[in-house]
Image 1 (cartoon, rainbow over the protein chains, first blue to last red):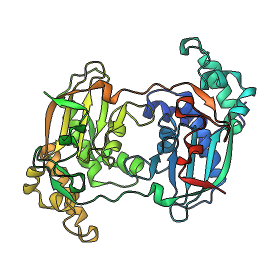
Image 2: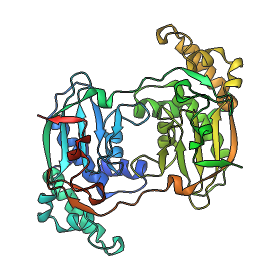
Image 3: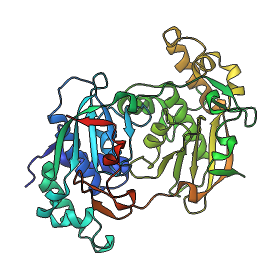
Image 4: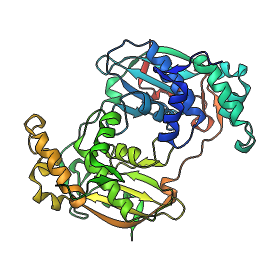
Length: 193
Length: 193
């Protein structure tokens, strides 16, 4: 039986439905991410609008986007890719927050999660049903949390600088980027057909 | 009356509800973003799973996350910050896609949108009701689209490299990052209390 049957006051089953709808499938990392965000909230003051940091690009940004008001497009979620499986929720006025991270030492009790997390066997050999069962049973027991003070200047929401019209493509661009836009400077990842 | 009363086969009103729920408020850029994604889909083959690029961090990633299966956490959405108000949807197997961009020349007919987009007056003086009305009336008429060939190697989904345990923080990290993780190398945007 899972230790907690809710994630941020919705049922685990309902959360997994939301994950499937948003993310495309019930990714194991995103289910763990739900328990991580839930753990953070349990140690944070209620009624404060919090900002969020994900230390990986994989899965965890979506847990934060589903369970908090922070998204990539509104700027309250920042991905600071340190390659660690961790999230932080913090007060954007003071920087005080809670960081939750997966503790690898705690995976010893959960062999299926350990095997999946460290990719110890090929994906097709993974027993997904058993993996998801262990993730639900473990909940946030595979995680730890710590109080942090976020350096607000490192994660501040950038305010858009003055826009001009690029003389080459005729689109709008931040004039601080140079005489022509970054796309016309050769950074566009596509060719126009 | 709006030229189109649907965005990706949901009503504009329903889309705006989803924007409010996910993004926190009915951001003008995100409503325009909805019409942009809708325009792209109208010029793309049906039944192909597409990947997405946003050329700005602001608003447009959320339009893509709401209307496509591409999210930051599943890796099918990439933000390539060129500072331009543009989205691309493309076939990840061939790179063939459609890029939709806001055409500043077309804003002359829509003074409220132009004033908002170029921040010509302070936000508090903006007539939000009139702005949203113009955005709905304009639909994708303020945008253009072009066929593109995405350079797949520039936007390829990164496959996670081998993980180890950081000898300093004891968390997991990509061993390719060095002897200790990027957080312990001084890149963490917080202090631990």
